[in-house]
Length: 407
Image (cartoon, rainbow, N blue to C red):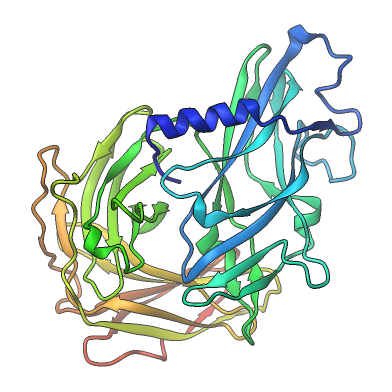
């Protein structure tokens, strides 16, 4: 979910080629040795990540990647071709920021159109820690409860074509922040949110002040308040990269602990091979200090669901500017409770994009006048999104921002 330097990308592609992982053809599927070489193409798969909310590590153990030409094939049907990792590989997703890629391997495939892609994880067994988290500020590794779907494969929405003699590179973007949710009593559950993104290196890049780097900085590219890509800056230099973005205009939001947010509006991404700079190492983005507060409450799903996860976002809307998400979090699976903490009370800083750097930031005028005012929004797949148009934390934290979501 973020652009890397060309050297990093080339190294990742080299790793893909040299990965040497075994590719096992599923019953009757493409890629068998009997297929004439002239009709074969190659599929390579890599993994990347968005930063996680409140964790210092999010570990998943990848067993294999499976592909099938049929969109309706079950995990036991014929036609699967597998990229098998032997042994299965435990990956800390939080190491895959700023465009870093983890090569999962490659396999030969018969030329044609493929309609199903699955990522298979090892399940946790006994006291095993195949999938786990380390909560920020702790050193303890906590097991992640995993759904049964990880054993048959997380089904990803993607179709792709393989041409004879050509290679297709796919990047799986594992959204750690949305994928890990609390489950009550100090337990955590894995609800995988993974999408397939382009491999081309483009996007938005820049620097944040190194003085902010111990404050859990997050940088995101958003459209209409929805986060498309997010990353944490380099822990030493403050450089960040939001890569592999579809063409369009993006609002870039920078947040950090005990700081006002900064927003760069309408950053144009018009190339599939270039990165748009919004700041430099000589003039990085800085954030003014701010008192912070919180919004909390519960999300009730009616009817109740054992599979849907509710997410709550705190948003701000600017006069003559965009609506952006400042913080978001998944509600607890057991109780529906949530807390969005660390919300700045001070007004965000805002600058409209310009190719002339450095950008000039000023305190934004929000639609809700006065500092510390937010729109709270709750959503869940299969339910109608609901919002509270005014939640004011300027004088006190708000703990009764409750939602009842219905289809």
